[in-house]
Image 1 (cartoon, rainbow, N blue to C red):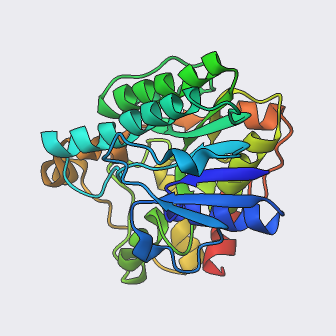
Image 2 (cartoon, one colour; image 1 turned 180 degrees about the vertical axis):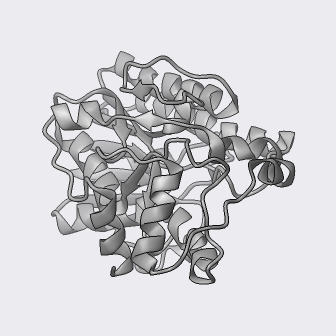
Length: 302
Protein backbone atom coordinates (compact mmCIF):
# COMPACT_ATOMS: atom_id res chain seq x y z
CA UNK A 1 0.00 0.00 0.00
CA UNK A 2 0.97 3.62 -0.50
CA UNK A 3 0.26 5.46 2.76
CA UNK A 4 0.29 9.21 3.37
CA UNK A 5 1.18 10.24 6.93
CA UNK A 6 0.75 13.83 8.13
CA UNK A 7 2.58 14.91 11.28
CA UNK A 8 5.19 12.37 10.24
CA UNK A 9 7.99 13.71 12.43
CA UNK A 10 6.01 13.57 15.67
CA UNK A 11 6.34 10.82 18.27
CA UNK A 12 3.67 8.57 16.73
CA UNK A 13 4.29 9.64 13.13
CA UNK A 14 7.99 8.83 13.05
CA UNK A 15 7.47 5.38 14.57
CA UNK A 16 4.51 4.66 12.30
CA UNK A 17 6.50 5.58 9.19
CA UNK A 18 9.23 3.17 10.26
CA UNK A 19 6.78 0.38 11.01
CA UNK A 20 4.93 0.77 7.69
CA UNK A 21 8.16 0.91 5.69
CA UNK A 22 9.48 -2.22 7.41
CA UNK A 23 6.20 -3.91 6.52
CA UNK A 24 6.77 -3.27 2.81
CA UNK A 25 4.46 -0.27 2.42
CA UNK A 26 5.41 2.92 0.60
CA UNK A 27 5.25 5.93 2.91
CA UNK A 28 4.60 9.48 1.78
CA UNK A 29 5.34 11.85 4.66
CA UNK A 30 4.10 15.37 5.32
CA UNK A 31 5.80 17.66 7.81
CA UNK A 32 5.93 21.38 8.45
CA UNK A 33 9.56 21.09 9.58
CA UNK A 34 11.81 19.51 6.90
CA UNK A 35 14.82 19.99 9.18
CA UNK A 36 13.39 17.36 11.55
CA UNK A 37 13.02 14.67 8.90
CA UNK A 38 16.52 13.22 9.23
CA UNK A 39 16.29 9.43 9.42
CA UNK A 40 12.57 9.41 8.60
CA UNK A 41 11.52 6.18 6.84
CA UNK A 42 9.64 7.67 3.90
CA UNK A 43 9.84 7.27 0.14
CA UNK A 44 8.51 10.79 -0.44
CA UNK A 45 8.49 13.94 1.68
CA UNK A 46 6.25 16.97 1.21
CA UNK A 47 6.19 20.16 3.26
CA UNK A 48 2.84 21.16 4.74
CA UNK A 49 2.19 23.73 7.42
CA UNK A 50 -0.95 22.67 9.33
CA UNK A 51 -1.66 26.34 10.02
CA UNK A 52 -2.38 26.72 6.32
CA UNK A 53 -5.63 25.48 4.81
CA UNK A 54 -3.80 24.82 1.53
CA UNK A 55 -2.99 21.15 1.06
CA UNK A 56 -0.29 19.91 -1.38
CA UNK A 57 -2.56 17.91 -3.68
CA UNK A 58 0.38 16.22 -5.42
CA UNK A 59 1.04 14.32 -2.18
CA UNK A 60 -2.25 12.42 -2.63
CA UNK A 61 -1.49 10.98 -6.06
CA UNK A 62 -1.88 7.19 -5.97
CA UNK A 63 -2.47 7.09 -2.21
CA UNK A 64 -4.28 4.05 -0.77
CA UNK A 65 -4.53 5.19 2.86
CA UNK A 66 -4.15 8.44 4.79
CA UNK A 67 -3.14 8.75 8.44
CA UNK A 68 -3.65 12.25 9.82
CA UNK A 69 -1.56 13.02 12.90
CA UNK A 70 -0.75 16.71 12.48
CA UNK A 71 -1.70 19.05 15.31
CA UNK A 72 -0.32 21.55 17.81
CA UNK A 73 0.83 19.77 21.01
CA UNK A 74 -1.84 19.97 23.72
CA UNK A 75 0.39 20.86 26.66
CA UNK A 76 3.18 22.75 24.88
CA UNK A 77 2.11 26.17 26.20
CA UNK A 78 -0.37 27.71 28.62
CA UNK A 79 -3.86 27.81 27.15
CA UNK A 80 -4.31 31.43 26.18
CA UNK A 81 -7.16 32.14 23.81
CA UNK A 82 -4.62 32.34 21.00
CA UNK A 83 -3.11 28.96 21.93
CA UNK A 84 -6.52 27.32 22.20
CA UNK A 85 -7.37 28.59 18.72
CA UNK A 86 -4.09 27.14 17.40
CA UNK A 87 -4.82 23.75 19.05
CA UNK A 88 -8.30 23.68 17.53
CA UNK A 89 -7.45 25.00 14.07
CA UNK A 90 -4.40 22.74 13.65
CA UNK A 91 -6.75 19.77 13.98
CA UNK A 92 -10.15 20.84 12.71
CA UNK A 93 -9.12 22.99 9.74
CA UNK A 94 -6.40 20.62 8.55
CA UNK A 95 -8.82 17.70 8.65
CA UNK A 96 -11.32 19.75 6.67
CA UNK A 97 -8.60 20.59 4.12
CA UNK A 98 -7.70 16.92 3.72
CA UNK A 99 -11.28 15.83 3.15
CA UNK A 100 -11.76 18.62 0.60
CA UNK A 101 -8.61 17.43 -1.16
CA UNK A 102 -10.08 13.91 -1.32
CA UNK A 103 -13.13 15.32 -3.05
CA UNK A 104 -11.14 16.40 -6.09
CA UNK A 105 -9.44 13.03 -6.59
CA UNK A 106 -10.54 10.60 -9.28
CA UNK A 107 -9.04 7.78 -7.21
CA UNK A 108 -9.77 8.38 -3.55
CA UNK A 109 -7.93 6.67 -0.68
CA UNK A 110 -9.63 3.55 0.63
CA UNK A 111 -9.25 4.53 4.28
CA UNK A 112 -8.73 7.71 6.29
CA UNK A 113 -7.36 7.12 9.80
CA UNK A 114 -7.61 10.36 11.72
CA UNK A 115 -5.97 10.99 15.05
CA UNK A 116 -8.21 12.00 17.93
CA UNK A 117 -7.80 11.79 21.70
CA UNK A 118 -9.39 10.44 24.87
CA UNK A 119 -9.98 14.09 25.68
CA UNK A 120 -13.21 13.46 23.74
CA UNK A 121 -14.74 12.03 26.93
CA UNK A 122 -13.90 14.88 29.30
CA UNK A 123 -13.68 14.28 33.04
CA UNK A 124 -15.86 11.22 33.75
CA UNK A 125 -14.79 9.88 37.16
CA UNK A 126 -15.01 6.08 37.44
CA UNK A 127 -17.35 5.57 34.45
CA UNK A 128 -16.04 2.92 32.01
CA UNK A 129 -15.77 4.63 28.61
CA UNK A 130 -16.23 2.49 25.51
CA UNK A 131 -16.36 4.06 22.06
CA UNK A 132 -20.13 4.56 22.19
CA UNK A 133 -19.91 6.75 25.31
CA UNK A 134 -21.20 10.29 24.68
CA UNK A 135 -18.90 13.25 24.30
CA UNK A 136 -17.91 15.03 27.51
CA UNK A 137 -17.64 18.73 28.27
CA UNK A 138 -14.74 21.15 28.25
CA UNK A 139 -12.32 22.56 25.70
CA UNK A 140 -10.65 19.26 24.71
CA UNK A 141 -13.99 17.50 24.36
CA UNK A 142 -15.24 20.25 22.06
CA UNK A 143 -12.07 20.11 19.94
CA UNK A 144 -12.19 16.31 19.61
CA UNK A 145 -15.86 16.34 18.66
CA UNK A 146 -15.27 18.93 15.92
CA UNK A 147 -12.13 17.10 14.77
CA UNK A 148 -13.94 13.77 14.42
CA UNK A 149 -16.94 15.39 12.72
CA UNK A 150 -14.67 16.80 10.02
CA UNK A 151 -13.01 13.41 9.54
CA UNK A 152 -16.37 11.61 9.31
CA UNK A 153 -17.28 13.71 6.25
CA UNK A 154 -14.87 11.59 4.22
CA UNK A 155 -17.33 8.70 4.52
CA UNK A 156 -19.68 10.65 2.22
CA UNK A 157 -17.04 10.16 -0.49
CA UNK A 158 -16.92 6.38 -0.03
CA UNK A 159 -13.80 6.47 2.15
CA UNK A 160 -13.67 4.23 5.24
CA UNK A 161 -13.02 6.46 8.27
CA UNK A 162 -11.42 5.49 11.58
CA UNK A 163 -10.81 7.94 14.43
CA UNK A 164 -8.17 6.74 16.92
CA UNK A 165 -8.78 8.30 20.33
CA UNK A 166 -5.25 8.13 21.67
CA UNK A 167 -4.41 8.05 25.37
CA UNK A 168 -1.09 8.96 27.00
CA UNK A 169 1.57 7.33 24.82
CA UNK A 170 4.46 5.83 26.79
CA UNK A 171 7.79 5.95 24.97
CA UNK A 172 11.40 6.18 26.09
CA UNK A 173 12.27 8.70 23.36
CA UNK A 174 9.58 11.34 23.69
CA UNK A 175 6.14 12.26 24.90
CA UNK A 176 5.08 12.32 28.54
CA UNK A 177 7.26 9.60 30.07
CA UNK A 178 10.73 11.24 29.80
CA UNK A 179 9.29 14.40 31.37
CA UNK A 180 8.08 12.35 34.34
CA UNK A 181 11.42 10.68 34.98
CA UNK A 182 13.53 13.62 36.21
CA UNK A 183 11.63 14.27 39.47
CA UNK A 184 11.37 10.53 40.18
CA UNK A 185 15.10 10.03 39.71
CA UNK A 186 15.64 12.79 42.27
CA UNK A 187 13.26 11.12 44.68
CA UNK A 188 10.71 13.90 44.21
CA UNK A 189 8.06 12.03 42.24
CA UNK A 190 4.50 11.58 43.36
CA UNK A 191 0.90 11.33 42.32
CA UNK A 192 -1.02 14.30 40.90
CA UNK A 193 -3.54 15.55 43.43
CA UNK A 194 -5.53 12.71 44.98
CA UNK A 195 -4.23 10.26 42.37
CA UNK A 196 -7.72 8.78 42.06
CA UNK A 197 -8.19 9.99 38.48
CA UNK A 198 -7.92 7.27 35.82
CA UNK A 199 -4.85 7.46 33.60
CA UNK A 200 -5.48 6.14 30.04
CA UNK A 201 -2.01 4.94 28.94
CA UNK A 202 -0.66 2.93 26.00
CA UNK A 203 2.80 1.66 24.98
CA UNK A 204 4.20 3.27 21.81
CA UNK A 205 4.39 -0.12 20.11
CA UNK A 206 0.67 -0.69 20.65
CA UNK A 207 -0.52 2.71 19.46
CA UNK A 208 1.51 2.14 16.29
CA UNK A 209 -0.03 -1.33 16.10
CA UNK A 210 -3.54 0.09 16.40
CA UNK A 211 -2.93 2.62 13.62
CA UNK A 212 -1.60 -0.17 11.39
CA UNK A 213 -4.56 -2.36 12.38
CA UNK A 214 -6.96 0.47 11.48
CA UNK A 215 -5.37 0.82 8.04
CA UNK A 216 -5.43 -2.89 7.23
CA UNK A 217 -8.68 -4.07 8.87
CA UNK A 218 -11.46 -3.36 6.39
CA UNK A 219 -14.22 -4.08 8.90
CA UNK A 220 -13.03 -1.42 11.34
CA UNK A 221 -14.58 2.03 11.17
CA UNK A 222 -15.60 4.84 13.49
CA UNK A 223 -13.95 5.65 16.81
CA UNK A 224 -11.30 3.33 18.28
CA UNK A 225 -9.91 3.87 21.77
CA UNK A 226 -6.12 3.84 21.60
CA UNK A 227 -5.43 2.76 25.18
CA UNK A 228 -4.18 -0.40 26.88
CA UNK A 229 -6.66 -2.93 28.32
CA UNK A 230 -5.37 -2.61 31.90
CA UNK A 231 -6.78 0.52 33.46
CA UNK A 232 -4.71 2.35 36.07
CA UNK A 233 -5.28 5.35 38.29
CA UNK A 234 -2.70 8.10 38.47
CA UNK A 235 -1.70 6.82 41.92
CA UNK A 236 -1.20 3.26 40.62
CA UNK A 237 0.76 4.49 37.62
CA UNK A 238 2.97 6.56 39.94
CA UNK A 239 3.52 3.61 42.27
CA UNK A 240 4.52 1.28 39.44
CA UNK A 241 6.79 3.88 37.82
CA UNK A 242 8.57 4.41 41.13
CA UNK A 243 8.98 0.65 41.60
CA UNK A 244 10.52 0.17 38.14
CA UNK A 245 12.87 3.11 38.74
CA UNK A 246 13.67 1.92 42.30
CA UNK A 247 12.82 5.37 43.61
CA UNK A 248 10.38 6.65 46.24
CA UNK A 249 7.12 8.35 45.29
CA UNK A 250 5.87 10.08 48.40
CA UNK A 251 5.57 13.76 47.41
CA UNK A 252 2.14 14.32 45.85
CA UNK A 253 1.82 17.35 43.60
CA UNK A 254 -0.97 19.59 44.97
CA UNK A 255 -3.79 19.99 42.48
CA UNK A 256 -4.46 23.60 43.45
CA UNK A 257 -0.83 24.56 42.82
CA UNK A 258 -0.84 23.05 39.33
CA UNK A 259 -4.15 24.66 38.47
CA UNK A 260 -2.77 28.06 39.50
CA UNK A 261 0.45 27.43 37.56
CA UNK A 262 -1.11 25.95 34.42
CA UNK A 263 -4.54 27.52 34.35
CA UNK A 264 -7.15 25.80 32.18
CA UNK A 265 -4.48 23.50 30.72
CA UNK A 266 -4.52 21.55 34.02
CA UNK A 267 -7.76 20.06 32.66
CA UNK A 268 -5.57 17.70 30.62
CA UNK A 269 -3.79 16.41 33.74
CA UNK A 270 -6.64 15.99 36.19
CA UNK A 271 -9.43 14.65 33.99
CA UNK A 272 -10.39 11.10 34.98
CA UNK A 273 -10.94 8.85 31.95
CA UNK A 274 -11.41 5.12 32.48
CA UNK A 275 -11.19 4.31 28.79
CA UNK A 276 -11.80 0.78 27.47
CA UNK A 277 -10.34 -0.37 24.08
CA UNK A 278 -13.45 -2.33 23.12
CA UNK A 279 -13.27 -1.74 19.34
CA UNK A 280 -9.61 -2.76 19.13
CA UNK A 281 -10.18 -5.96 21.12
CA UNK A 282 -13.36 -6.93 19.26
CA UNK A 283 -11.59 -6.45 15.92
CA UNK A 284 -8.90 -8.91 17.08
CA UNK A 285 -6.06 -6.50 17.72
CA UNK A 286 -3.55 -8.27 20.00
CA UNK A 287 -1.82 -5.97 22.46
CA UNK A 288 1.92 -6.42 22.91
CA UNK A 289 1.84 -4.66 26.28
CA UNK A 290 -1.61 -5.01 27.86
CA UNK A 291 -0.22 -4.64 31.41
CA UNK A 292 1.37 -1.51 32.87
CA UNK A 293 4.18 -3.35 34.65
CA UNK A 294 5.46 -5.03 31.48
CA UNK A 295 5.13 -1.78 29.50
CA UNK A 296 7.20 0.22 31.98
CA UNK A 297 9.79 -2.53 32.35
CA UNK A 298 10.20 -2.71 28.58
CA UNK A 299 10.64 1.07 28.23
CA UNK A 300 12.78 1.65 31.30
CA UNK A 301 14.71 -1.61 31.52
CA UNK A 302 13.24 -2.56 34.88
